[in-house]
Image 1 (spheres, helix red, strand yellow):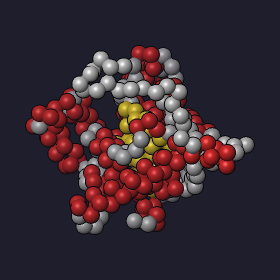
Image 2 (cartoon, rainbow, N blue to C red):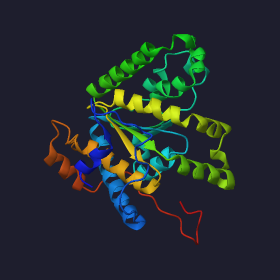
Image 3 (cartoon, rainbow, N blue to C red):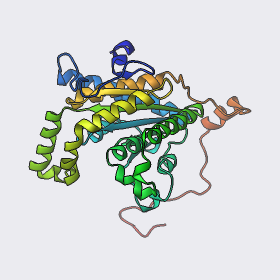
Image 4 (cartoon, rainbow, N blue to C red):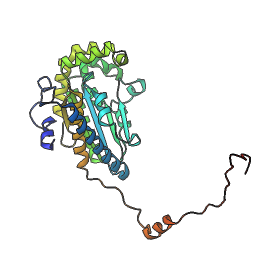
Length: 306
């Protein structure tokens, strides 16, 4: 898939308003599972190579953000896309409701603490966008931060949007590539996934009462996230809306977009340290080191032999 084809999923800065309610939830075209699995394996291998040089060079960092309604596939797509990367250089963080300590700080504090260092890829299951998504739907949650809900007017939310855009711009200027994905799942497919969680004992742990009660706010969430994506998709930190009814197809598109952005970094493996005498080092490596002490291994017949 060429970059021009991937661009259909990108929310353009200053472009037309994207309504998530009417945006596709299934990738167009025939879905051949075997071909998609093969293509995905190639993309994960490519991602592994990019991550290796990223980790070796320490020249940049990468932050991948996943947002979406419950059961939109955030966890499964993360697992498929990042299955082949080095865990030492990849940090996956799921942001749930803030705890007591996090609520004592500003709303960006825990996200600031979770930013990947240079040489690493950070993957966020939900993110700072909960603060202009979930919190905007459930405005009473502002009380936990000592903010009166009555103050949450349009100017309040515009202020948060501006703060988030400035924060992301500062991160990009300091060497972090940011790529953001909204996984768009249909109401019917979301319902099927909830039903599977309800009937499959191995998936019971994924189901919570809030999953079901939050479905009543679906239209409100999609409207608010449509506004958030339109306001915060920028050239330096773009949003991509991924049709996610087909998890495999979604994972393939996500992996290709991530690889596109990592490839644009044009990173290279670092060379030998400056001042190093390569010839002398090569001669030293070729020499077989001599053991300072000769050991005699005991035989089976005489195990006490030293």
